[in-house]
Image (cartoon, rainbow over all chains, first blue to last red; front, top):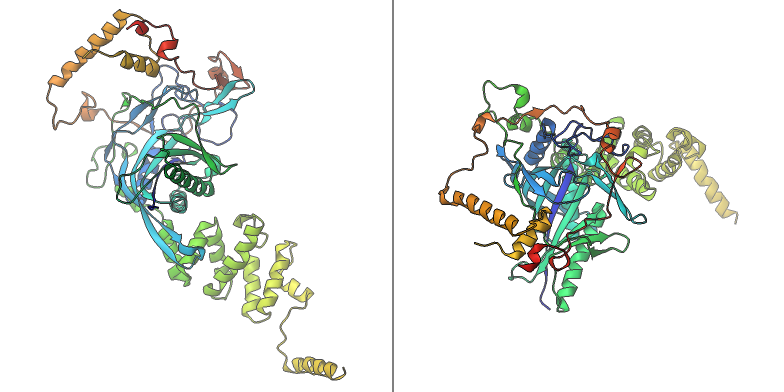
Length: 456
Length: 109
């Protein structure tokens, strides 16, 4: 049987973290009373016009720079037409001809053989990043045969990040998206919380034999978490391989991921191939961005976006933070990955290191093996940890001063998890876990044990 | 270049227009012919113009402040049907029936 090469590309929509929407002044907020965050423009009432939000442009430029893209100093807005109840205008304003950023790359890491001891770095090319509007939300009421529409989300700014089909499996797709998520969160351009719909991922999957042209691809939607992304991609790859090996063909269709059954199913309500009738958005002139060289002399600062100014103020990206952790604390690269992967863990680690004399290389073991595994077992976040960095540092100090053994320390930790407010020292005293250093006392105990044996 | 029935049907589906009768189709045909005259101009290597104002047409950038919204009642006044502050729509797109199944003069063509 000839081998199959799976090809995976991703289209990621990240909601921009801003106070107001992309083209209107209504508020951006998750979970508000229906249709309360909707302006006349968002509802597409006649006579309303789009007005571009500066913050959204800055967010897109930051993201483009962080992903090594070329920023287009002139980008254009277009209309993409289709009918749906949650798209009141009948079109979405997007950037189809010339997007704001192109030709970037994202590096991410994978551990080979699940051991976290060997990591490989991979790169995926970023085709482009474009600014576009989000649609409203449809709630399907099948019992009454109707759809309820809430336009609160309609018009919220999105950055669509298109990743070239450089990935080959679910694990790679998941790792790439995870890294993108961390970058967006570090930049603050998007909070990228998948559960709140701030980060949505569609996967394009196909398979082919080496040396042959790419196979027909399918688009997989309705993926609600990074874990499900890996599952959905791997399932679809398998499905396509099985279909083709059984002599079938792959349809160029859109499929939905069914998380309950772990499979993909064709999406209903897809009326054949859509013709979006793209046209330039007549109400918006080109978006012009500047750099220090091209900065116009007499323009109002508020109306000018300087790419270099934004570049200078980019915060440390996750890859840089990891390098700094490794350099500063002498921990392993794998450790730095785990620290950044868990929200708040890196800060917790650094806080403990500050409060203890124990070497960071030893502290990291307690953080990753003891603290993290406990949190995972009980599905707690770092913020929810019953053991604070202060308490852990306190405990590690006792260990470092050789007042207790390492085994005793683990026992104390178990007690601390209960969150009863006792200090490590109190627990040590309660359970008599102190290490004895007095020579005479030790001799007496040993002698008593020997005497006990002799009497038998 | 005469427009085929397929193209006309496709347009009716996409834009939900109704060409109604041969006059309507003829009008469309003439409009396309008129616009096609643009093809006579050689635009090789010329950047499309966005506006006659050229670079005097500046894109205004708005500050990221919340200045609108909170007008649920007013917006819902326009809705024929509503349920607890939601707009009500049919369960899915109702596509135009296929050519064979709808009453259109295009059928005869």
